[in-house]
Length: 507
Image (cartoon, rainbow, N blue to C red; front, side):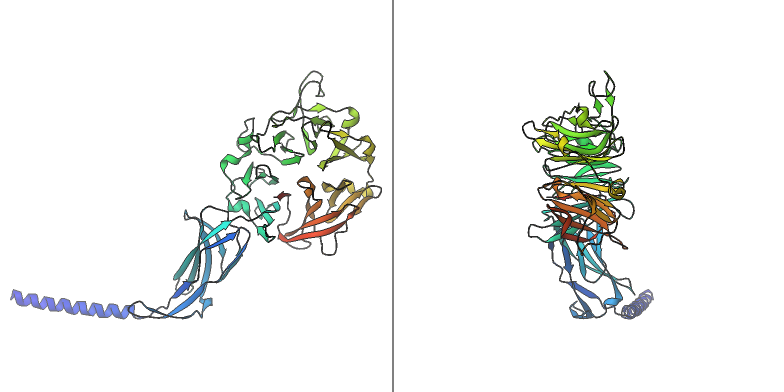
């Protein structure tokens, strides 16, 4: 009986198992979901700022045999899917989404890295949520040989850099969002300045929360590149500079409060930012027998070892500052009253070539232009009274002037902006509006720089917002030495950001 009972139980179990198998087969065969196959993605190397187009080969799986062999046909329903091209680092960090279309067509602004990025192409079927993906490796290199670096603030008020560059072959490259891509930590507090120090290939960036430099070749940033590391005087975290000014072989860092520290650009030196020059010794200060702490205006002139020129805002006069060859020592000295313009107000000062020009307002309210010229025999800039002249303030335009720039030509020209108009001061004629040509339509002009500060070129760079629209345009003009108000448009960079704060030249 027990044996018979066991046989009956076995027959019952087999029947249940058979029914279960039949039911399971029916459930899995209820609906077959066709898949897709992605191919055609290859490992790629691009230059930063280069446009990359990738068109994957996508096929639909119309049949799949029991041996897993697939029967494919042309992909026919792209609208049933959503797409994403994601850039991941080797540390499995999502760096950016490069595109959301079936075809990738974008400018590569990813940070330059020794390690390739893992680019994952994802297709998600909208109805089922099923994701198909394929990937390739993307190496980003830097081929920018020269160009302009633009400093601005993004829509969230964070400092940002774009690079409008050119390759050795003459191909244009535009790199957007450099600081965001490298996770630069000092983007808050406003955009202050950007300057390229060619001797060490350092791209200096100053914001309201910090000053440091980026590697020119990779745009890489490390925490050892902050300004405090270079300073001979210890400064707390968050210490920053408002501006960085170059004049004839030397750089000067200046704070919001007018504290100035010289910095040598000689590649053979250690690159120290020396102690500030704001403490005047007895005999130079305005207090007999005592030291005096002064505020220095954010303008510099002169240069060479013996004669950097700056404006003592506290005592209202020009001072000369001899600097030793390593810029580790600097003590201001007085100029005679006839050369220092004691009691005047400084409106502007800059050096172009071997000429320093200064626009000053006399106690009586007149505007004058003073000139200091380099004398090789004394390695110093000397005041030339014969070149000093009263400026014709046409319609009060010089009172409204913004973005004053001294351009190096046979005769130095002073360019400036008022709103959306570009002007030049012309000797004997006063202020004249510049003729920039029919291809130029300025909105508000936000920055003017002269390439003469960096090279022998007499090019003028103008950043202007687009009239009545978003974004901005960068114009490069060639100055005609014999006709200062006639500019020739050399290059126009469209699609630039609005409200550019500063521009430097990268080479």
